[in-house]
Length: 290
Length: 253
Image (cartoon, rainbow over all chains, first blue to last red; front, side, top):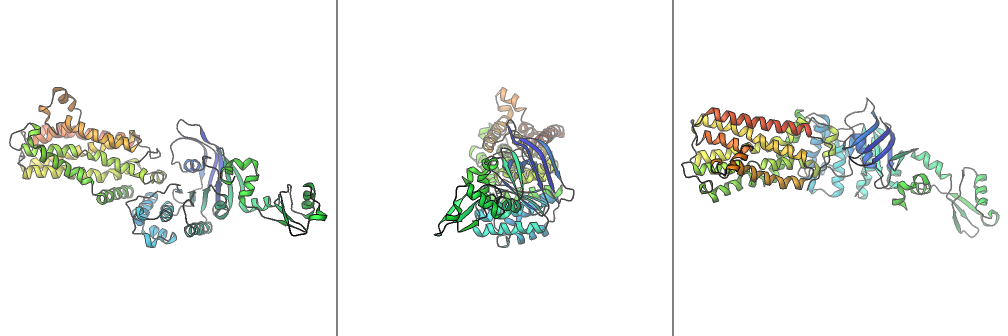
């Protein structure tokens, strides 16, 4: 749906923030973009949508079948404070579609984002979480095929976060291509199907998230349970997809398997553990997970 | 295009309506100033002097349109909606028209109210008769109000920070008004002020208004003044549209 290749971007008078970023958003997939503060995540989204001032080079290609302008929910909440939720949605829909009559789109957004009770409330009277949801609804009221979300879980309570997770899951089924930026690996794990890291203005596409986790889970993090039930956590290195390999690796770690080993548990690691371990990606997250 | 103009105009109309305080600047303040200071401040003692002073302050404070154009334009940044607007990439003409149309209409309305009060209640004559006088005033205030909007637009494209913009609007209001003869009529001003005053839209507006009211009611003076105001207003708006970049971040207060 969207292909980005060799994207370079610099703010006026500044050094390049993006140095050859590449990305591919596919219909029905949610791509997670993970990176530390200042790594260029928001800039990448701004450069893709051509909504920030600066020098841009590289290729950005949108599939001809993509509907509407790209929907972009910025990190900052974008709502006219003096307008009601329904008025904000109506304006956003008119702007995106260029049509005056947008009642059907607005009604659908109010239903999808569960804003019925709040449709007549002015934006300034909403709570932080309600504002975030109304902001997301405005960004996607025109039902675009490509949706970008910059740190969407910021300041959300549990229920609102769950609503967001449900919405993004539903978009997969509708064939929407979604990109979500996040500081926290947990958010990416819950929301996304593929993963891209942004480190120093360069993207590292790690591919499908599940496959990445499966592959990485065989690379270590084994718990050895001793005779007395005492457990020893050992980081074993190498491919551990067979018993032989685990035994070899455990011996290599200096363990007396006959004396000590009662059982072995391979624990699927969390994304944060894997990212911490990978030296090429560490810079992108160590600020957050370290 | 119509949807975009209408949608932005509706936002700004609602903002003006729900804020209410703009009408203090546009109506209450000039009315209070003219009532407190009276015709003495203008050095006038002829018939209709009170009306002329009232119209002068009305003309001066009509330039609050510059300030409220700023409110309209920086609202995109205050609300953080500017990125969404930039992505939709509306035509710059449609965007500016929608954003500034309500303020422009308020400016025309304010001038109409002050001229009506001055002519109807404060003895300001209409030299060429009621109908012709009203037409002469109309062809003057329509382009004059556009110059206020144009000044606001061009200032917005040049100034990144809202606090700088708004500070300058008060300077513009007082300096252009004073130089243009809104407080003290131009012939009573010092020589250099009269000379520099020719560069202000206020001078040309008041030249036409004075001709239609206290003067001989000549269409020639009215047409030349309003034509010049029209060219100036249109020029400012076209220049602002050419300079406008919706992707350029600005900083609201």
